[in-house]
Amino acid sequence: MEKSGTVTTSMINGIATISFSHPKSNSLPSPTIKKITEAINDFATDKRAHVIVIRSEGEKTFCAGASFDELLRIKDFKTGKEFFMGFARLINAMRKCPKFIVARVQGKAVGGGVGIIAAADYTLASSVASVRLSELMLGIGPFVVGPAVERKIGNTAFITMSIDAEWHDAFWAKQNGLFTKVFANNHDLDEAVSALVKKLTACNPEAIAQMKKIFWAGTENWDKLLEERAEISGNLVLSEFTKRYIKAFKDK
Image 1 (tube, one colour):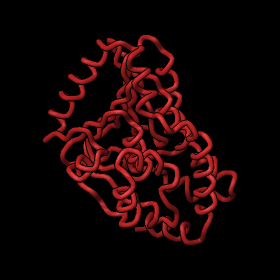
Image 2 (cartoon, rainbow, N blue to C red):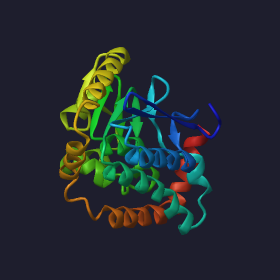
Image 3 (cartoon, rainbow, N blue to C red):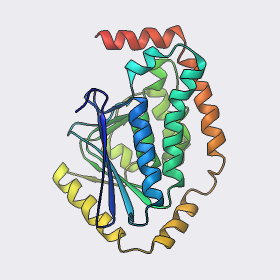
């Protein structure tokens, strides 16, 4: 893996796959977020793609969320807002994509990783997968990913995740609607992903596109909403509290 992380794509028999990786627990620096977003937008208009799978490499961590290294380098509001706009554009790309997006979750997911899971249309996970919204501990909050997460799991569960900032296991995530199905191991997970997407490639693309519109009804204001949320995060990330926390975490 490159130090900056990688994003690879493939297309086989109508199944488009986006796979990302980063040596630091599959974290998401801006270039990685941008590449994932571009891949989703490309597959959205590619008639050969009937379904999209989003996944990450490795066995223990799906996604560690925002890159702490990059957060520490943010020195002004404009840079801060633009960093969080990366997540906003990714979530909106997933929302607007006329194809079903299936997330394959093999391990832990934090912050932005939870946002990706929530913005997917169908999520299959391993029993060792777990989720956490840790933003409050950083001195910010789950502002940009919040609408996607709250839409998927409801207000009460979203508040719980946002305030306690603790790990919630795969069965909690399934019970609250973040995971669609949970499997005993990665082998069973991969078999289930394969079977599902193969079935979806045989479905009418026009019907899927119309279903996506229905599933995401009421989110038409998200371009504006997520930009406003990015501005909140862009301001808060400049605080001394956040800088101290991230530096202390990195120095452990």
